Length: 316
Ligand code: AKG
Image (tube, rainbow, N blue to C red; front, side, top):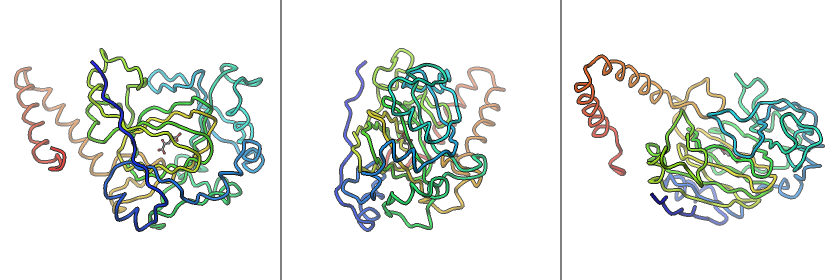
């Protein structure tokens, strides 16, 4: 079975907050925002500069023998390194000092001071570097949730996942490819929590994941200075084509009552959604008490009911 042809993310130039709020965010589709002022970081953030100004603060990083990180078979380890050491290693092809292999790859998703309680905010964890970046204020500042460093070795690939908040991914240095899938493709992505089990999106095993062929990929290649708007729940898979530094900002675009207060990553499902999933687990348990043919019959009825009542008219 052939996979669907890739579509391309729409590019907008020199967008203002007014245009973003009136025309782009309401579409609920990813968009590349080009020509925004992201500050002097774009020129300044060489590996040497990052190492000097990021200093010795320790960071927890993913270390993987190959670029393709596999969350199912856990082919990576979490290791702690001083930030300057990490940057040095992440831009090397072959390492003199290493954990697993001389060609291992590194990936940083920065965390808060206490990752269980604190939210990543680069102005708190990396104040001198944060001065160099101008985060485009396309959202109301009182909605800000977190700012996260994403620093990757060349060929580092992050699995397909979704977040529950709106997001601006600011590519500061290095090129990367991002492939996105609509929230409506959730049923074709073989989800395990917030992640897709289909790791090799370019050569998927369609005998194991046949429905993946029906998902429609939306692709973009980000250049330094590009900002990608990733609306909440849009799945994204990211590969760094070069050593690259990005900062992403999440903000709460919905009423604060929806969000789980214990969410430090911006990826815990909204409170009513978590409740619905738990109720569904209980419904499944109840169905399992039935003889096979009744279970099948009532499962179909439950699905019909959920579809009729809950699918959006726009997408039925
Ligand atoms: C995000 O912005 O949510 C990402 O997952 C970006 C990952 C990356 O750019 O490395």
